[in-house]
Length: 264
Image (cartoon, rainbow, N blue to C red; front, side, top):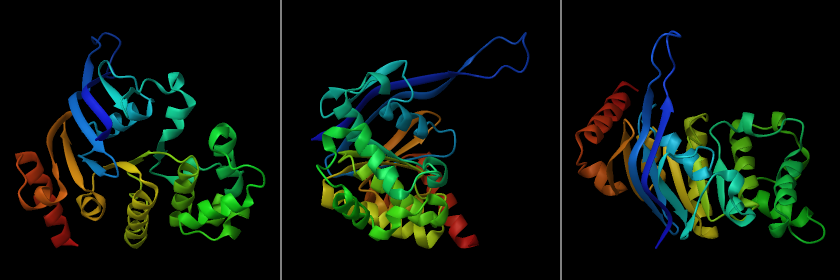
């Protein structure tokens, strides 16, 4: 059964004009995309910069309103974020690319997680929240003592773990990760990817993972969807993608990734 269903998604943006006399045109960022994410499945949405993959993610989150098509979560329409019920809002959570800019530098880690509970009291633990906070931090591999520290005192990997903890505190059913490890060192990337796989299994999560990095895809994805110029050109299992890609664009991405590995 699909947790997330995207059907015929279309998004166009106004192209910048080079002069006031130039006629305004539009750019088709997403053009008729169909995509499913199943229960406890990680789907990697892959493509170069400008392919439309992050626009799809923002539509799922309700941050961008499509001009065509629709998105549903567990059979219920996912509209703009301002029109979603609190239950739908908390069920679909985001892990951002740069944890440094997504965490409030003035708040402690504990306050950041408790703020999520304040906004969504239906999932807030009753009574003293310290034990619940310690459990959430433990789930992402952080010691309870981190709760009293501010983001500036943490490493990049620790900050991303806090971002994941903040999302996890709301008991989501779908995580949308937009280039969630691209700002981290390679060794830390592997740790965070392993954490996401473990959390998916332990908490019955589904994951839509946006990335341009095929090395990352190998470590986390069950299925891979490839975007090129706003169009979904391939949707297959991770094993099939790396052993027998069907679309010429996908084969080109794999060749480019292999060439980069050879240079490294």
